[in-house]
Image 1 (cartoon, rainbow over the protein chains, first blue to last red):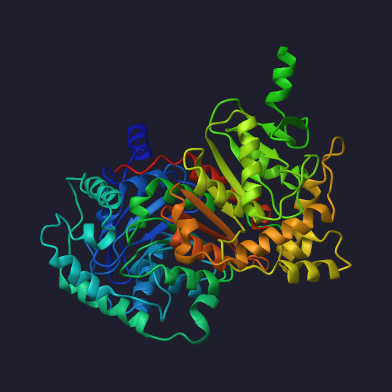
Image 2 (cartoon, helix red, strand yellow; image 1 turned 90 degrees about the horizontal axis):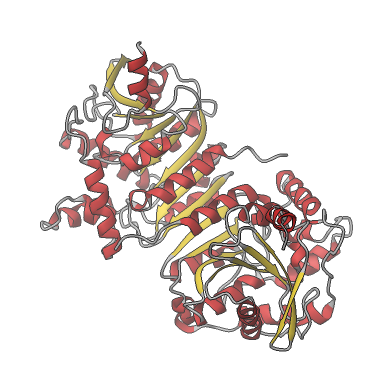
Length: 291
Length: 291
């Protein structure tokens, strides 16, 4: 690696970093890694139907200024090979396989929506692998979801330039305007953009999310099994996975803090990206409480 | 003022700053001001039975590194003269008189517990005076309080070195240990310490808080009148003014964000002081959303 390689890697952003590939467990995973070489890597687990380029560069690049950040496509998604499973447990298994292929023994996880369900499963099953957990716009096992109704509504809004405007933002002018700004950021990258997938990905993903919420979890066994520090984040008016999920998770988790944002929907993290980055950083940098 | 005066003022802390006095409206108010001379001042509104020296130096000094911070005794409290009113409206009137005496035309308010009730009243009545509002461990008008029961329990814990340990912290070892650290910080100042008051202050204060919570507020008129950005903060296990108050305020306020901390009681801000300072700073520094 030359000095020039190192320099260009230092300033790599979600929009400019090359997409890399790593293969094992029968899957060739697409990913981008950003940020410094040292520190606990933050692995991002993406939402229903999203790929690497559906992340907000404003969030990813800001977080990558002081920690390694890794965005990837899980099995079957984007340019990753393999089959998209129709259940959270298998998606968690594939994500752990990816983390393992990178040779990482301890990571922080940021799971958004569907990715938040996967993050819960991984954290519960792999207490040593996961140091801290950030759950955004997601639901506990047995939680409340309105995925299909909200999707149907969003895709009926034929005047919306992108279904994510009605899906992720409220109808207020401030939220819609933040939504347009997010879409602009997310569409900046032209070359080597990730592949958008069709129903071969979204059908099993929808089934996984709906089944996760439809499956009762007596005594909140999954949440109780998570002993890591957790930051739970939601928008005030998330129509897909309502904020009551966040409040419920906060109450059942042994060590969680809760942050809810005003006038925001499922994409609260994109709308309030500066505050979100600050909250994530504060949470990840916090030292364990003295006993 | 000499250079040396300015230098010593620059590094003044809650423990070292001189107590100052300002008189008007029939009251001589005791206060300490810290931090730089420019920026929107943050005025602190104290809890039931507390005076200037009941604030946590770790919070006040950290916030004062980049903004003016003013701690004061409201009428009748500590070394301020006058009568402690038995209702929130009159306490708000006195606090506004104090702010007015300092010649401040725009402030941020941080109200803790009883101080949070006063802060709500001021913000609702003085939309131009209050820029942003931080409500910690408090309740809306008509909210839920268990003041007397919790006080009775705390004062029955005769083995506790300070009633604030059972009042403000949970029974976990982490919370109790954070409580002892807080008490140590709050007791550092020896000279020119504020006066602890007796029942001439606590009786009317208790009546004010209990009446505030016992008075229904149809349609949450008070919260609806608050149009400023609000940061609502609570501990997960606040026994005096439960966290459900915070969730309810978040839902009714037009522009609020909610932060709840793990394994913490009424004194969540003291227990999680580093995170709290970071959250307050992020909130106060945030630019208004683009419309």
